[in-house]
Length: 256
Image 1 (cartoon, one colour):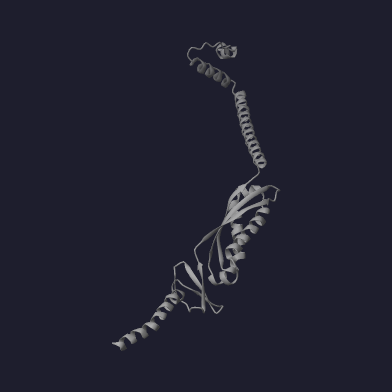
Image 2 (spheres, rainbow, N blue to C red; image 1 turned 90 degrees about the vertical axis):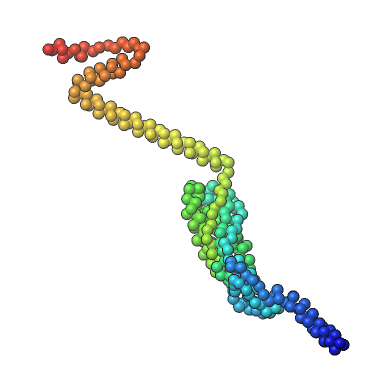
């Protein structure tokens, strides 16, 4: 009996430390990564590569893992004060959509890819919009977005970052510029209205000249038009109309 108790005590003396050690070491040895996650493994400071998804085994103390998310993320570019090519002040902001395509490069080649991408977005936004005119900024925004995306993607490509889209959210103009643009739009509408009115007058005058030329060739057409006008006026109820009758109407009968 004493031998059994001694064996149990000796077993407990080395089993309990092993269990405690395993309880602390197991979470450090086994990691589970989701489908959209990758683990960049460093062994004694040396890059081994990216692993995952699934179950990952690490050597405690020796291995260190940096978890990276491969999903598309967004960064709001802070509002930037810019001066357009035609010297118009404006305040613009944008949003950048990007994702990590090379986890190792995103960890090794840049300290903080979030901050670096955001700062590149700010500087590129000021640079590109400073070369565009206000009309292009308001009406050709798709082309400007594409230019921003290409420039930012080219600069972040060495970091393993893929910029999928850049969108300008808002363009804020001074109140004085808004009033000037409203006056310009109003003047443009008035100009178009006058042009349309002038074109209508020109076409009407042209038709009247053609009608006069036709009537001059056939004088009887003027008399027929006169009779038609009288018939239209007579169709109105409760209307008394006095019309002078030209003697030319009776000229055909007098000749007979």
